[in-house]
Image 1: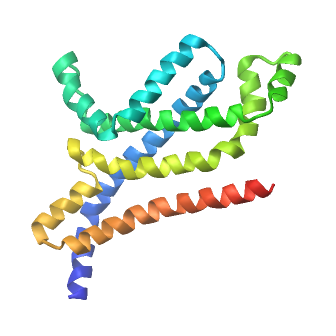
Image 2: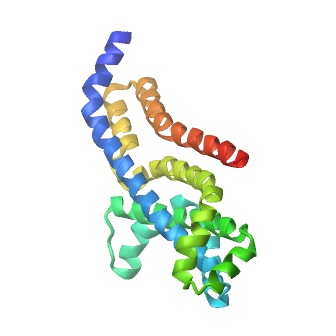
Length: 219
């Protein structure tokens, strides 16, 4: 029984590998876009511009109040109906996860920047630094330690949430697993393999977050 299970996994590895590549591609692209968007969001939230803050608060609350799954359905099925735009399922998943992730990372960045002593900003402005120089050379490097652990936690959530992409037709590792189960009825074996896949991707990130948090708290 054990040998047949291992044989099935071995035979299924190429198919599972293609699905895993899709999952990792969606996850890593979403993480990259979330990081860039989140830093921009966090910086804009600290500029104390009422209009910008109002727009970003609406954006944040929309992605906090509406589940990611609903956003996937709204963009994948709604855009063709209401605007005549059709996004491939892969890029629809990347877009939704990136927008959701940017709102989460952005709040982390905003909180880290607000936690810095006000004198840091004033000192930078007093020596003639422009706003990009102030954030790039003074504020963001100092906030990095404070925002890295919670940002890594957001990354793990993005990777796990990427599994929802199967519901709009992305042939990711979850979909491939389902196809193999439909053909072989080996649900426990395949779901066990999927469990290990996500565990070995997400656990090192979670562990790194905790290690960094403890190390920098003692520094």
